[in-house]
Length: 227
Length: 283
Figure (cartoon, rainbow over the protein chains, first blue to last red):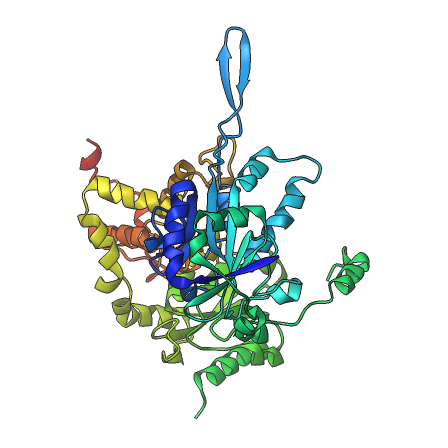
């Protein structure tokens, strides 16, 4: 895996270039809450310092609350089914947290379990995920309990870790992530950084890992427990 | 001098000790300091679980209509803030709760959610006295100009803009029904949202069904909503539901000189028929 350094001042320019080619989804302030929205310009995006996690997950952009699953035409010859137009625009999700990004491979397994869900995977293939690591957490956070990390890379194409106010460490995790870097190569410099140190405050405050094997073992005998 | 929390525990203990109730529903410590969670106390020593602080937010009257609790406990006491007392009064009016089967431990939280807010246990112990407290004192804190401000701002907008505002708000709705769960007066066994023959409301989280659900819920609460604001507080996507509910409450107050939850003996405007009603609006 390669790493790069991105100056925070270069981020709006990169996102503006991306917005020309991608549907850009990012956290936006809406009254008291910060939630993901489709944004036209990087100016609308809330700073990662202003949220621990947006109100809802990014799932809504891969699995909408409602959408047409099929259409049909009825004529005197009977009923003819029509394939729906799947809205699978090329999408860049920017600013989700590593926990949110790590949900996507878990959902992949579910949607490819006994049937491959075309709606999910068409959108998934068209979506690039840029996660931003957590430098702090709140009392509800528990990623470490389930094997995650405030600077975990699962499900992300790029992971940005704020090393300080001016600099992101960029981990290039997939070809989709590399494609984004290729949009504006001049914005990135070669370099490395200590992401665990950057996330230390969050790491220190998060709960210890659960022994998931022990949970699975215990459940075998207690799944039907009345208590 | 005892703290309000100690006063509360002593009141609960006395009710359980004397066999006056079988269950006290109150607030207990939550998993984070700024949250509390309902607790169910059946033994006198269990009252030590009870807390009283500005983070006591749930309207506990919502538990009074729970069939599982009612089946198990003949007499129930609840810790009730002023809006929760009003909700209980409406439940009695609507014959959902028998006044003899409940006891109310009234509490007052001056500024809910504000860590510095004063809290107190109300001295009144009977329904009659609590009702008098509501009418004489608490009414001034209910449906205030400040609470009505958002509804009245929206009222001034041209209809198209107002429609656009609500359309945008309801588009966010997830149909999680937290508003319904938190509401003490949404107690139907079969909610209209779940009826499918006929299906009155589209159940998917689609703009059309969302609009229908949220407006229907507001109308079902017209003349009944006691302005506790729990629906809005529990909404995960911050839909300003109380702007609708307060608008309707103000209309009921102005047109019918009626405010919900102040008088067990009163009749609700939308549940009353009078032969001499003014029916000019349908002529």
